[in-house]
Length: 146
Image 1 (cartoon, rainbow, N blue to C red):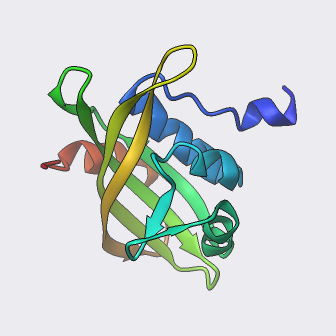
Image 2 (cartoon, rainbow, N blue to C red):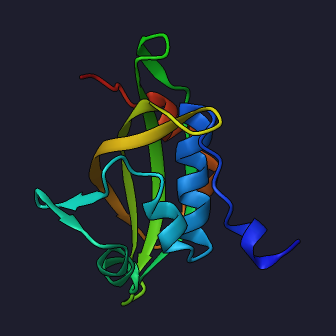
């Protein structure tokens, strides 16, 4: 596999888009992850550049994640995707963060692609070891609402 292929995001469905986003983050492909957002990543209401986005994540390691089944508002109109993530901060602490990502379809040059518009994630707990086997259950237990 070529290095570029390892970070090639797929945005063909809401579930695959969010999964591709976290795979890109896990592999340190921050620019590719950034490209999956609609209109750029917003932090505190302000759009950050791809370089600022990478700098914000520089001291964080994505340990594991699970993406749940999407909830669609209307077919092809908008979707919410539940997610559970374990991340390690620079000081070694592990955090379980869960919530929902909102996605909208965008017409691309060759086909429809899905883009992330916002995320509502909350820190559920701090762990000393990752609850990897529990992540799918945590993601699927999220109630995503508009």
